[in-house]
Amino acid sequence: MRDVTVAFPGTLALDGVSLRLFPGEVHSLLGENGAGKSTLLKVLTGVQQPDAGTIEMDGRPVQVPRPADAIRMGVRTVYQELDLLPNLSVAENVMLGHETRRWGLISRRAMRARASEVLAELGVHVDPASRLGDHPMAVQQLVAIARATVVRPRVVVLDEPTSSLDPHEVARLFSTIRTLKEQGIAIVFVSHFLEQVYEISDRLTVLRDGRLVGEYLPEEILRVDLVHKMIGKEISVLEQVAEQAEARDVDESRVLVRAQGLARKGAVTPFDLEVSEGEVVGVAGLLGSGRTHLVRLLSGVDQPDQGTLRVLGRAVRFRDPGDAIRSRVVYSSEDRRGDGIIEDLSVADNILLALQAERRWWRPLRRARREELVASYIESLDIRPADPHVKAGTLSGGNQQKVLLARWLATAPRMLVLDEPTRGIDIGAKAELQKVVADLADNGMSVVFVSAELEENLRMGNRIVVMREGTLVADVENAGLTLDDVLALIAYGDRVER
Image (tube, rainbow, N blue to C red; front, side, top):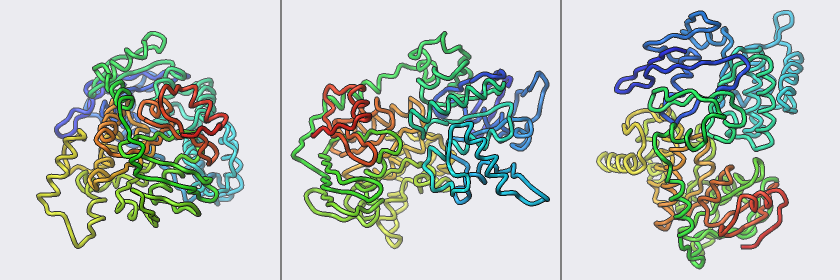
């Protein structure tokens, strides 16, 4: 791709950006949200037409007017927000568009056999006839990658492919990527996990503000220099967040939420947990450990089979999230697209959604109050673009997460339950969100923070709760706690009392 330029009304999304892909090479595309990565990939895959610039394949100019043309050229994409059909079987999703036919009819047996072969290459062993929606997000991610490799492509674009995978599954995926490399396939790897970028990449390209910063070999650029090139400034915010957590004086006698013997059959065994006012509790554990099940019980999304829950000493029973919201306990799901942002609604409507639902339809907010609230959250959270009327689905992942945070802050909560709030967003947006959460805690708000990144838990949390196989195995003060300490708790499950 040479000198690609894309202009939208009021903004230059790409300004003369070039990208080289070589056969049998993993090329990581890096930059903050809004840097132009998505737009560049849309041009490559025929979703967006450039205003200037050219694309060549094997040294010959090509036109990519539609996604179907990109697919015919051998360019396949696996998006972060999975474009799958959960109501269909695993095999039907893997083979979508490449169904095996016999005598003009689809052969489900042949489809299942071929899907099993492709999945086996990825190290995935699931029943191809099973319904996709019954499998966890990690399996669905691997199914999406399998679909992209059914017909051997020339180029595979992987957009945040590891955001829902645990370390074991990441290792398995990387093994598959290396196999694809050996077959001469060019792989575009988009990720905000710099450790993974350095592990798997042969070449790096950095974009910032729609411009090409440079192309580098991983062994020739230090990680700190790479971050500097991505954001254009030094990151000190993360250090501030850690300092705030260390300096935060939590009064453990001021318990906001207390769970005693809370459990749900098949999900979480009975656990006790206290969250004090102004405290950040990090929830750690491997994928499938029960992290999400635990916080869904705390916030009314799921109902317990046994145990009690108290808010400010008063026994409560959350029949649904609405009950929790009325007790000023709010939950933000890890599935930003499925359970969070409503893409076709404006930023303003997304922000005000929970508050208006709480007020009921017959008590609409006054227009002046709506505009005042929305403007204040757009400004305070630095939501970009700062236009309340744009569709939320057009925003970057980091800005969508800010919109969701604004939605819940508008309800004046006492406790925020945030499930993977920084998953799949860049380091700059991640630092901004962590700083917002730290400031909220400093002002007395309680926060339960689920993250697959152990460093994030250690940076944010005053306490760390560790889940393992549906059981709360540790509840420890984050004073001198190290990464190795948390890894040991996850691995061996030794219970540590608070």
